[in-house]
Each structure stands twice: as C-alpha cells, then as structure tokens.
Image (cartoon, rainbow, N blue to C red):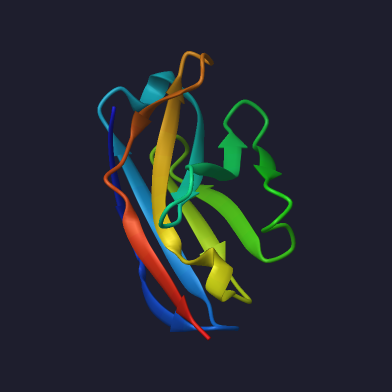
Length: 117
C-alpha cells in the first residue's frame, strides 16, 4: 500500500486546514486508516483513525471537537479536517494504513502543518 498525503501549510491560530491522503495498491486489504503527527523534539502521536468495517472514528483527546476524519471512495482516500487550530498543533502529519488489522504498518511521507500565534 502506498500513501500520498497533502494539504499542509501555514495557518494562523484559529484557522482551518484540510489534509488529504490517497491510498494506492492493495487498498482492498486495508482495515483502517489514520493520522499521526510528530512535533519537533517529540514522539509521534496518534491523532485520529477511521475503521472501514463500521466507519467508526477515533480521536486523540487533544483534537476532539476540532478535527474530523472522513473518507471518500472507501479504502482509497481519507481526509482530516482541522478547525480551530492552535500553535501546539504544529507538526508533521502522517497518514497511515492498517492491512489485516494488525496495526499501522504503512506510512505516507508526511505533510507539515505550521500554526502561527
């Protein structure tokens, strides 16, 4: 599975961005997709995920109510709508795919989101 993320950029605090991730290859085997982020000097952390079997969504507490994960063309494209952005949301955002329900094994190249105060 190959993942291509896009949509990052520079935005002021309180603004919005939409990230997109397009999956190609063995997408029929993908059980869930997610977004993670890594801020400078910090560990990569979970942001949100969507499970294809029942379209369940999950969010980190830090983004609940502000970010929304959704999909289009099931198993092919996933979005992350980010609203009310804060400077602490600044990070490289990665999309990831889970094939076979064993965890996120496939990763995109990352897209940088910078939120200015």
